[in-house]
Image (cartoon, rainbow, N blue to C red; front, side, top):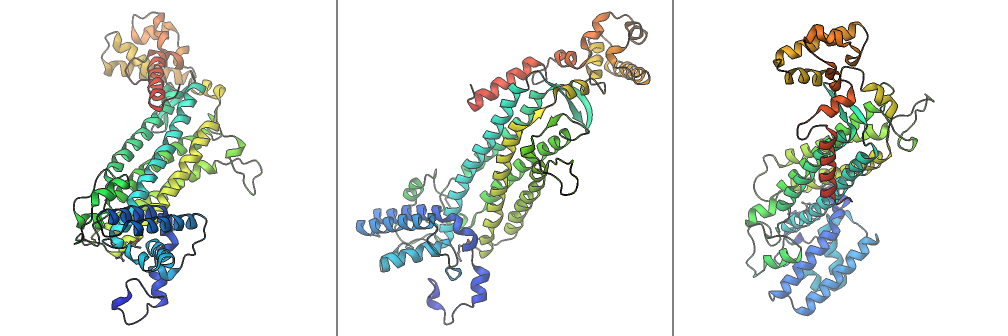
Length: 459
Ligand code: ARG
């Protein structure tokens, strides 16, 4: 088959080169965008008089048909046709003959692929956003389910202070909320049209870039044709958004791997979400969570790939850019899959209230509230810290909790104090003692839950 670009060539392309340079094996995923952008382009060519109304109609119809054919898997992909753009065009020529060859008027594959990619990323952003939202909903639903349950919060992976489980679920929601904001911000830069930049310099033909931009739902056009033809910042940005989402997922996965271990025992994962061992019959492993944690590495790698791909590229389109799709598709697929399974696991897991009730009374989680009780009585923080440190030592040595120390002993350390000292001891009291905005006090947490329900439109 003669190449579209073959005019100047005397020799046929080596089969090894065709194999090496093809991208149809992965960029077929852009076909819907390629068809949509081609239709918009054809209609614009009609509007400015470069095609007749009849020609536009035929092209539009044929492009739609080709789209349906690809939907049904009926368009064979051929290495020698390089990429999705050539496949669509060849199918057009097969149907319409000479007319099919007119579609590429005032267009280059450079602005074509840039347009397809922006349309694809725009849709990908919307899909990821929905999936993150579904995960947030799962966490918010847990807040009701786990209402009143107190869990230990950790710093340095050592028990720190008691908090409401819902407080922790909403901490994840906040992270994912920022991920969604970042995606929305990224989307603004994605949603501009490069179409009409042509190869690099624009075109001497009287095209209307605003028309194609509008037809494709872009908010406007990219102003500089050189930049428009080769900018891939938007892919790097999108992959950063995905990488950070993957990092947030992996942090959550790690928390729940620990929490569901025999050592912690705070959380149980239903059998449907565990996998077994081929040799140890007793094992129920958290492979799903481990893979969420592990797949994050791939996504960070994808971000790295696009950054290194772009580094040092001269201005203008370079074929290196064909490689942008590999990490793009991989990161999208990986994060999509992780988000979906994460939402399921979040809904399916159960807290073990008995174990948690005991756990929050071990490890002096109320020491900080006791210290603050002393501060309220006028003791300088540094001294209060020391006094409570001595009380903790006393408790450790006698195998007691702070709440089990006698009033007599408190008086030895603190001086004049009444039984009100016990009102800040024990996990529930420590939680109740909180006051600050955003703290784990039940009212503060209830406020957060209400806000999230409002934001997510949950009744
Ligand atoms: N398959 C190519 C890519 O993905 C399309 C653009 C090719 N442009 C060119 N001048 N060879 O980047």
